[in-house]
Image (tube, rainbow, N blue to C red; front, top):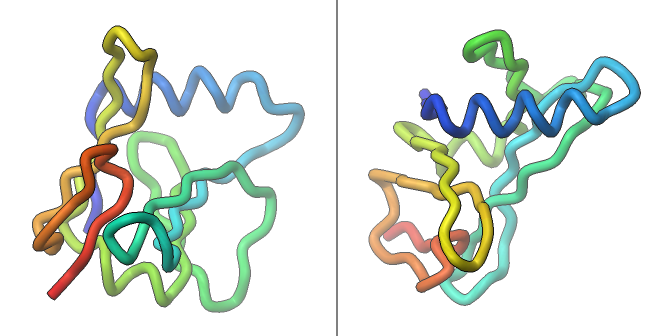
Length: 107
């Protein structure tokens, strides 16, 4: 369904270690951004009834049922450049993306 690069795994684990309690990694696709949809990453402590939980490399990734339609085959990567570090998204379903890489559209 989705994939995490080794760099993304390391960054998620680093951020997760700073959290006070058991934490889930939530991935959402929301309306908005410059290309119709955007990725929203956050830590969460609860799972809703409509959520799907994937265990990827000891990381519990929580995805709501609506977001599942947009992320099949998604690769989440993490890299640093002169502007700082950021998660990068490679979505085979996206027909266009904006220059920031966080916003996309699907045909």
